[in-house]
Length: 323
Image 1 (cartoon, rainbow, N blue to C red):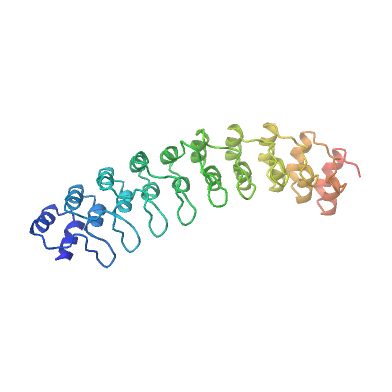
Image 2 (cartoon, one colour):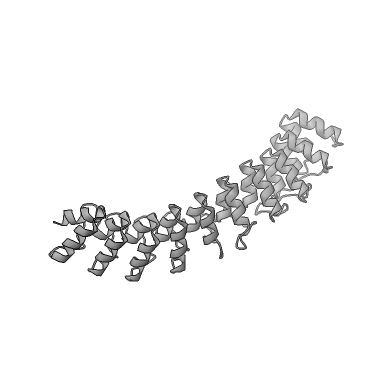
């Protein structure tokens, strides 16, 4: 009898469900082999009237299946705000988690249900909760490029994940320019925030060789001279990554071309070390000091010569480097 009852809930057969409830004699919370009960299936089907019938007849809204998913998790995936409201009125925990540590809010976000996300937030869902992988609702929204939901979730202070990445870091890493633009418009976004690896969003954009994002970040407050823990400024990284166009953009946004890191290395010295011919040329064109030495008293031409970068040696000689 319970199997037929469950099937009626699965299929949205309100009349059959009413007949069973009127007759009585069944366990309304009986679960199948997957751990799903009648309420879970009615929520999955989106049958609001059946959900109401079940709750009114004593269905336990807090029951979780074998995956630790509750009816609220299931309906959040579907984004049915009316059924979410019915479930919340029964007093269940809005922030209950499944075996992966995911809440109803996370399921609404992951499935792109912006109205359900907004409603859950209005009802007090905690967006600061992290799942078992250390990801918050905003992290899921960023990873999936969900701009409308990102706006909903990023109106207040943004937190970082287990390795210090903020949503802006993640969006840049994924080359999601539209998401980056949305985040940059939020007052809570700290464009110069550093992750645990000592990287800003600007550094990540250069590592990705994404000039569009480099320009976007610089035009929205990224510091072209911000030194990280190792003393490297963005222009050092542009040299290291052979990134000619990022170098030009940084210089156009006020980067100090003669800045030194903790080893006393300038961007020119770094470029000479790694054989970044195009970056060397850009720096020379912008009148870099070619004879500056590092902490070991070596200049750019020394490293270019040591590493066999003939073209760079020639460029430096023509620019006035001492031999």
